[in-house]
Every structure is written in structure tokens, then in C-alpha cells.
Length: 256
Image 1 (spheres, rainbow, N blue to C red):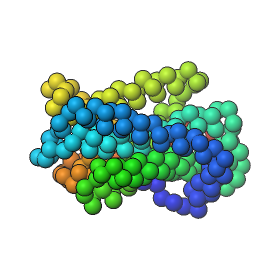
Image 2 (image 1 turned 90 degrees about the vertical axis):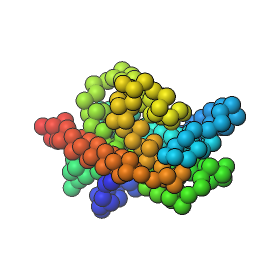
Image 3 (image 1 turned 180 degrees about the vertical axis):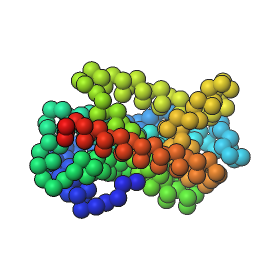
């Protein structure tokens, strides 16, 4: 995850001031996964006896909830690292103004990425409290679910910011939906990996949201395996690669 330097802290303060009157935007982003949990995890859960996960059978709601928590981290991070980032870069010209100060493009990349992952972390922390209140958490490993959510936000935020620097207009954001919807539906959030055809299992296992779902699900159920370590390495590498690309792209777009 990104290191909180003085320049990063300044950018976080700027974003906090800009968003503090728009608190309802954060609330709306948090409520979406909660509605999914109640409608699918609890509603459909009445018709499903449960799934086996890492050798133990868990109720359907306990199976779905960690996946929704990981999706919350992804969605929260994605909003600021795509639409809002693009507006600041192309229309508001905010980053050009920042470069008139001692800030560098690397500072801007770190600051915006940190803000996006914090937004995803807030969504996930609130969702975890809902899970606890509903009795869907039975392991102390779950305290690591919020750091895991920040890691998911770091990975998606870095990658999405990097991709956003290549976008030319708002129409290009159709590709965001085109990419995230399959990730969400094929992330083993609502049904186990074994439900997929054999050829598709391997594809799903290398998708970023699936790695996040595995990590959070193992932590909230306490059934931790080497898969969690593999997920951490995957997400860290994804976030660092995205951060590197966006820093280089900002150099090209703003300094050349």
C-alpha cells in the first residue's frame, strides 16, 4: 500500500475538504452491497443449505458476505480512480495546478491512489460491522479483513488510474462497466469455484477480484490457507504496477 508522506497527506486533506459536504455519496456507495447481502445472501440463503469452504460447511449468507465486502473495496476505489480522476485530469485541470507547487506527478499519483483506497476501506469497514451485527463473522482473523480491503483498493485503484490515463472521452468509460461486471459475476462471490466448468476455473482464479474474495473469505471464516498469501502477493504486484504506469503516464501527459 502507499506510504503516507507529507505530500500525500496534503492531497488527502484536499479531497476530504472537497467531499465533506457530499457525505451522501459515500452512504450510497455503502448501501449497495448491503442491499445485495439482504436480497441474495439472506433471501436466497433461505433456499440454499450452504457451501463447503476449505473443509467446513458454512451458511450461504456467510459465504456471500465476504465476497460483497471485497466488491465494496473494489467499487469504492474504482469510483475515485476512474471517473473522478479523469475529471481532474482532463476537465478540471486540477493536476496542472498542483504541478505549479513543489508537488510532483509521483506525489499526485500516490495521493489520489491513497484517497481511492481509503474510500474503499471505509465502505468495507462499515460492511464488516454489518456482518458482525448479523452474526456472520466467527473468527478473530476477521480483524485483518479491513487491511485486506485496503489492499484490494490499492490494487484496483492503481490499475484503474493507469487505464484512465489512456481514456480519451467519457464514452470510454463504457469499458469500465464492461470490465468490472464480469469480474463481479465471475468472482465466486455467489457460488463456489467448483460451479464453473473446469476450463473456466483457471481463468477465474487469476482475476483480481477473485483473489480479493478468497483473501477476505478466508479471514472472515478463519479457514486461512496459502491462497491468502498468494492473493496478497498478487494484489500488491497489481497495485505497484498500476502506480508505476500512472506516474509515467502523468509525466507524459502533464510535463511534455
